[in-house]
Image 1 (cartoon, rainbow, N blue to C red):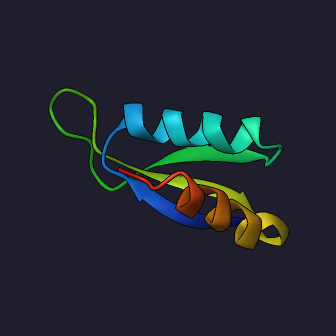
Image 2 (image 1 turned 90 degrees about the vertical axis):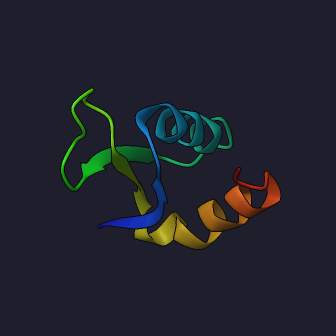
Image 3 (image 1 turned 45 degrees about the horizontal axis):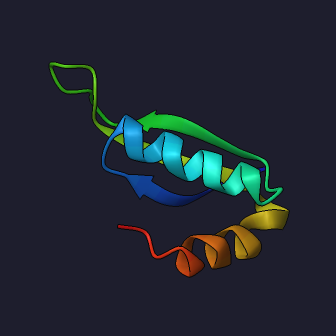
Length: 66
């Protein structure tokens, strides 16, 4: 089951975090959350498998999300 571990403020940040998690061996996905703005950007959920949620959170904390 997929679990949301973070909500990114835009698509660029979401892809960066997804790539970071994948580089660490964690299966990750993104999904748009809410209504997109006029330019097609908006909030994006970062999802991982429930079994990897703790590890994924630790990776994000280690790299200090900005």
